Image (cartoon, rainbow, N blue to C red):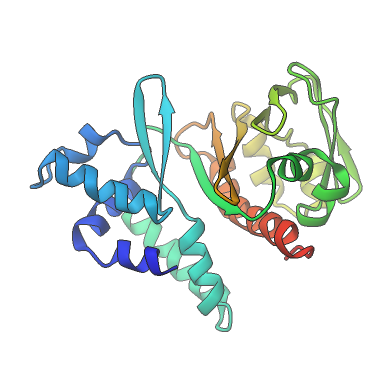
Length: 259
């Protein structure tokens, strides 16, 4: 946490984070545009932010894209804000985002966290119903081979669809699958507004990818959820949901208890 505060203490680094907050997934060249800073200085600031896990890097071909990572900021909020009225805090944060937001060229979600576990146990936690039911509240049925269908069971409802499939499966390293099928029944059992569910069902199916890699005694997990259109209702929902799910996953693997 000390590294996070150190990274945020510099106004130039906060400015870079502000630019990523407006438009995530920028290259070094894009971040340098319009800044009164040398490219080398921007690169050094980004290295500090990446070292503090406030920025996550994703390679797309030869492009190195930078994403604002919510994990350490969320940890700070969980430590000091939870004793207050969190609902009121979220309302104010939502209002701020609504007033400041601009359309994104790359509407996607990237989240990185470091977990004191093994790659094998993390893979099991992502695929084994015994684990997913504890921190996610959902279970998946699949043989976890590319092209195979997967069914979701949540709150007693099992959902299957030909488009709900495994895309990539490299045990202990990478897992990718298409996202949930939104049906009226799914909305009912989860207490969701019928119009919101209908809007989600109209959107192109998105996909989520889990990248797992050793990081010293820890394991680095990067979750990339993409395939969204601008103003996506699904994107708005998963942006709120993933930090909660992944925080609970981390707690389960490190303490034996989900949040």
